[in-house]
Length: 247
Image 1 (tube, rainbow, N blue to C red):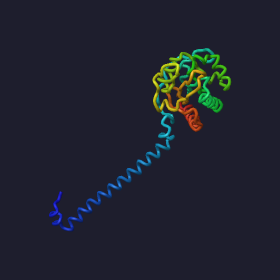
Image 2: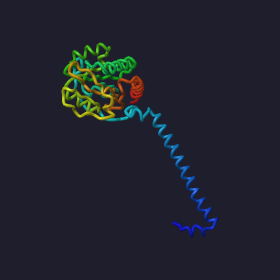
Image 3: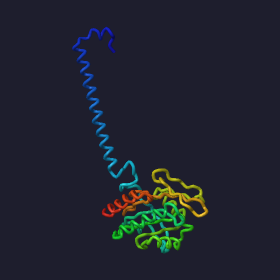
Image 4: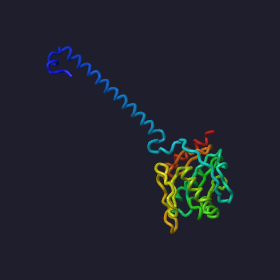
């Protein structure tokens, strides 16, 4: 640091050189900050345009996890395992027949996908009951018939409750809990987001995610879509077609 006396003995030329030196660096600093700001702004804009990544981090054909093997019972009474779905693109939805809130809407969207993609031979729809005690194959058959479900392309599955809950929580990373049980490993946001609080007769509420899950031919989860949002269903429709085109 210079003293007052030293400052007084500086020549005007030396003083102006110092001022110019510091000014030059100040201008360069401002310019660099502006360039960085513009670059960051453009990068953020691109990220926002890419399927709305910030707003919809679970969509956009990412690769999440591989669905583990399972063995459940279809409404026809036959056993269904993961092997039957390998090589197919499929959409999974966890619902149950006594649900009066989100499940009818989830299932209605699945029915719409069945109609819109009727010509896609490699697409399967899979609805899995989170209330297997009530949802026997017979009950699921009646429920499926109300929605015009094609038995070859739209599966309705039931089975052991612990196996189903483990598949939902550990395989698909989705929330599910029955108040009759002790709460089992609730899954935090984002995969347990927007749970469906569905009426369960006089027994209270079954809590389960209302998301539809897109799965590819290698049994990898590729996207999670809010089954109560029409815009999310449009994006699911788009992503299904894209995935069906991949080999």
